[in-house]
Image (cartoon, rainbow, N blue to C red; front, side, top):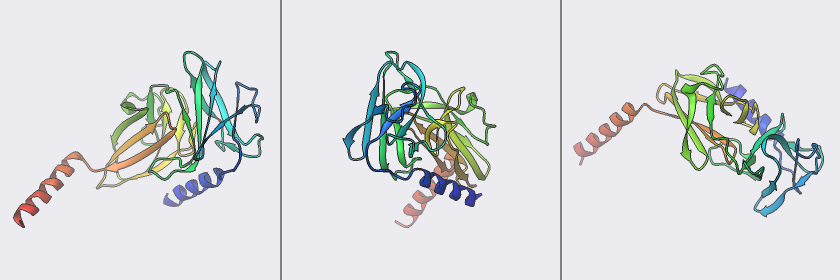
Length: 226
């Protein structure tokens, strides 16, 4: 299973090889024109474009002005325009190593659907499961926790009731699953999604009682050896 996870990560890295130059948005809002909407270079590898007249849900890709390279590599990305029909799309052409997935090619949005569900093989891939609904933490971040048996699992975050997702390969329709491991020592999986930046993460942590016992043991040890 670890080999499968490694192969998956390598495949995503190869598919997201950076391309230098200008970036564009192509989508159902411009007839899938590969050079339809030019993105503005904000500096530091950050590109951005604001669209108008795009109320509701739309699909798109980031291109280099033609179809020789485009992201996400498989399937389309997606966004929801706001009530006025506007959305700002940000493309990060940096390889960001901060513990969140994905790393290169993050697709940020100015809009947030507002309801997210953590899905995976550990909950039957139910995209409307109330037990794995993700609670808002502020700033576009949502989280939920589940206690799981030791082993390897898969996860992605979806807009509740749909397969508009954020996964291991960024924001995409039915985005790629992220593999993670839960151990006996750390049985709680903490699932998070950053809906505005288009990234996810999973952290395995110990049971609260184990943390309290450990803290108590350390305190006793310090007092005894003071």
